[in-house]
Length: 223
Figure 1 (spheres, one colour):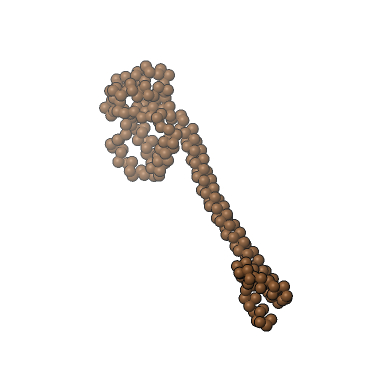
Figure 2: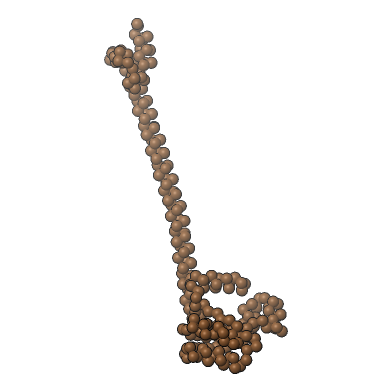
């Protein structure tokens, strides 16, 4: 076999030689040839460099894929953090608003309204006041007439005056007592069957969030 043909055969085997998959006899043949052939030795070196370059590229691609996964996880965490931070901010703002509203209405929490029947007599009015004083002699009692309620409603809904005008001739509102006392629950119980009392109303059982919702609803309906 001449030198040129031997080189062609060896160079065809160099990749397998580098990978270590040749039979022992073939491997020895290639190894012996490389030891004496500069061209094939140079070609083997180039193959090794190509393999190293390919391995480096594969490693780089793995690193890039890994970094992409890390970045994706970081972005997801950032989005979750923004969502959680926004929710916390909303909760804090809501609680501050609830607290402010509760403080603004704190004075009204001790108020107890006693709505009166349209046909109530002066004697029945005095009896109701006596019941209140018997339970709490320090209670503050304020009488609000039907006319005062109508005037207050007209002022409150001044932008809807046409709707209120129909109530001028036939006032549908009830007169009531506003009572400031610490014995609201006891008063409610005592007044249940008292003549002249239509019903009673108090904010005492509402928690701060119910008060807040009620305030918002009231503002929306008044627009």
